[in-house]
Each structure stands twice: as structure tokens, then as C-alpha cells.
Image 1 (cartoon, rainbow over the protein chains, first blue to last red):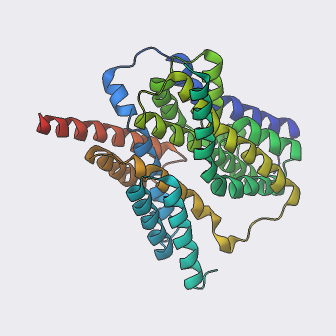
Image 2 (cartoon, helix red, strand yellow; image 1 turned 60 degrees about the horizontal axis):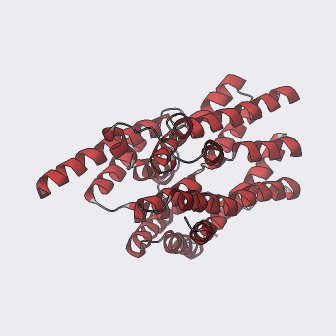
Length: 108
Length: 236
């Protein structure tokens, strides 16, 4: 790393301010003012619109070749979390299947 | 509203945030290790983690810093990773926009993935929840996770020994995200939105950090609204 101390602090400070500005943006500026109904309806889909897009490239994306153990563990996590309507059960099932798979295939 | 309800909402939040320990602890530790290895001082590492609290963007920034990228590029790329949080902010505003300014500012500081997803799932399931209880719940989730995130960054920075790569802890994050999103699938519109999100994100995976995800999320939200409108029209 070739940055000066001041430059490193500049990066950290700008990251802190920038990240806060992004997160506070609508909470701060819009607050309680009503948003257009279409926007409100779209925003209700935020979690299901963001998370699959974050995960899909990690599972199938560029570079990493699809790994059957990962794929199966992911499917188990989704199935259990969906059926049980519970995050914890899904995570537990996914992690258990993943590490069982790693041990069974001799990867661990 | 009664103080007891607010208090129980807070503790419900703490409880619902606990499972993310398995996700936060390894990643916070890893960030501490990687940051020190990259050449940051302990003070810089801790300031980074305490002030930013956005794991993915911290790793992205660090990676670019190790490559000695131009400062502007480091900031642009790492902050792009966080742009999805503007959507989090907007959707939170629908629920807690009426809260006092300082509370909204604190929520802004603490809107990381686990906190946001856990809270928004609760709000969607309980639309009648009073504002005080909504705020208490959010801070409950955050107050379990945040000290762990900061504390284990410190541990990682101190011990400097990383978890062996053969344990593949990088996969805990996708498992946790999938487990968070699955219970939120409540209708055909949700299924369609999730599907479009994944497909578009995969198609745009070559775009620079985070920007493909924004397009994917936008398309997915529109898909959700369109399918919902269509389903409602069929029922009436």
C-alpha cells in the first residue's frame, strides 16, 4: 500500500461520510412526506429485489465455477427458510448441509 | 404507548438479531486480519469499521487500496457497493419516516444488511406496530450485532491469524442472505421479483461493483408491481 497516512484517513473519512449520506438519504430528506403511490409499491419489493441479485453472482457468477455442494446447500437453506418461515432454521440447514457436503467430498 | 411494549419490541429485536452472530463474527474477524495485513494501523482499522459499518464495501475498498488504485476510484467503487442502501433508506422511510430526526440519523448510521432485512420483515408482517416499537425493534437488532462487528474486527486485528481458506466461510454470507429472503416470499409477485433480480444481476455481473445490482433491483421492483397489478386484476 503506497498511500500516505493522511490519504488513508481521507479514504476512511470519505467512506464514512459517503456511506452515511447514502443510508440517511431518504430517511433524512423525505422523512414522513408521502411518496408517489407507485414508488411506495415498488419499495415494498426492496428486500426480494436486492438479495437474490446479491447472492446469484456469488453462487453462479463470473470466475467461481458452480460448485454442487454450494448449490445444494443454497437450495436447502431456501427451502427450509421458506417452509419454516424462519431465518434461523434456513441458516442452520444451509450451514449444516454445506459442511456435511464439504466433509463428505473430502474438501475439508 | 406503554413502555412495556417498547421494551419487549427492543428485546424481540435483540433476539432476532442473534442468529447473525454466525455471519458477523467470522467476517468482522477477517476484516481485522486483512486490514492489518494490508498495512492499516490498528486505529485506522477500527475507525474504518466503526465509522462505516458496511462489510462488503470495506472489503472492496481494502482490495483496491492493496492494488494502490487512485483514491477517487477507491471511493467510487467502494461507495457504489453501498448504493443499494439508498433503496433500504427509502423503504424504511415508509415505516419510520415520522420518527424524530436524531433517531432517523441513528438508523441511517446503522442500516446494514442484517439490520435492515430483519427489521423490514418485521414491519411488513406487523403493519400496525406503533412507531416507538418499530424504532425499538430496529435498535434491538442493531445493538446485538454492532458491538460484535466492531469487537471482532479488533480481535482479528490483534490475533492476525485468519480462518483457514478450506473452511470456505465466504459461503456463510450467501446462505444467510438466502435464508433472510426466503420467508419474505409471500406471493407470485415476490417470486417474479426475486427471479428477475437474480437473472439481471447475473447478466450484468461484468459491470463495476454494485452497479449491476442496482439495475437488477430496479427491474425486479417493477416486475413485482406489474405482477401484483396483474394478479389483483384477475381477482377482481
